[in-house]
Image (cartoon, rainbow, N blue to C red; front, side, top):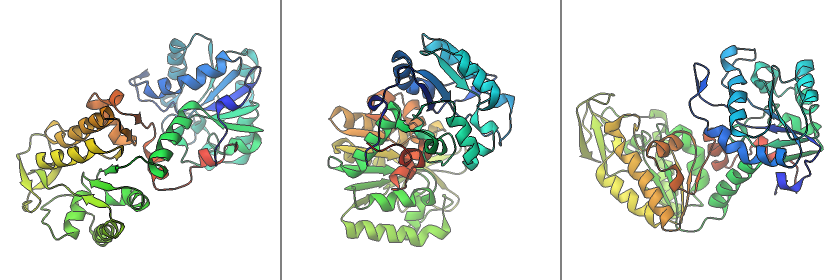
Length: 397
């Protein structure tokens, strides 16, 4: 069911409560990466330019339901003020008299940023009274926090039951558009690249995508549970013993569905888990005891790259190796480069947030793919076919 978006409603002379994802990294009170703030600017500017009074709400970190100065959104308010041409007010609480007073003093066409909603434990409990208190600040609600939309929290979903209209912001709309079209209406060939450490984190995604994709590429630490399922040696590589049977089952399901399941044909193995450890490239039958695989090998990088470049829709979630260590980053960067190539050839390329977003950024290629998701956990749940409370609670068109 299609949901109402920001352009479907009137915001002039209205108080607009907007949930954003300002959960940004801070060091000594300084924001080290403002990408999440910048991503929210189109929705923010739309409301103020159309004469609404914008009341922003967000969480930052995990303050355990009580005020903690290191998790205050005050530095975010100061930074936001440098990115917009209107006044940004800051309220030292998100509910109560203090918040009401700041909102009353602000004018239409200005912005109020409320203090961290997670300073109240009722936020994560999705408690009705707290949701109602947040909702009482405004006439309409906009959710533009895709990264939090898999959580049934007050500021994400609970507030909607007290609003006449709840709509998606531009960022949320864009996220859903890319993920929805890639999964439910992909241009083919459709390739999914799944990496990361654990099979258990990706089971739901693999199962949901098996009847939708043409090829699934497996990399990262979870490869070696699949190797074990095939009777291949894995040495001291990462293994989820209790997921071997499941890996066998997934290999069988892919075969039955006519989906090509690609595993690395070679790996970079090391004696120990550090960048300076002795390392070498071995084939898929060559991982000896005492060695652990920390990246896909060069042959796999070429073979995966060729399939990715020819794809018309590519979805990537999870690195190919321990890309934080330079000696084990080549596989992940090769996939990033192949994604950029696929985009050049007219493909739609989507990075599913989390570590993959960090990897494509590190490779300097974020602007050379179609879409980099802002929410790791939210994109995973969406790709698993799960309901996202922050989306399903919005008003239908």
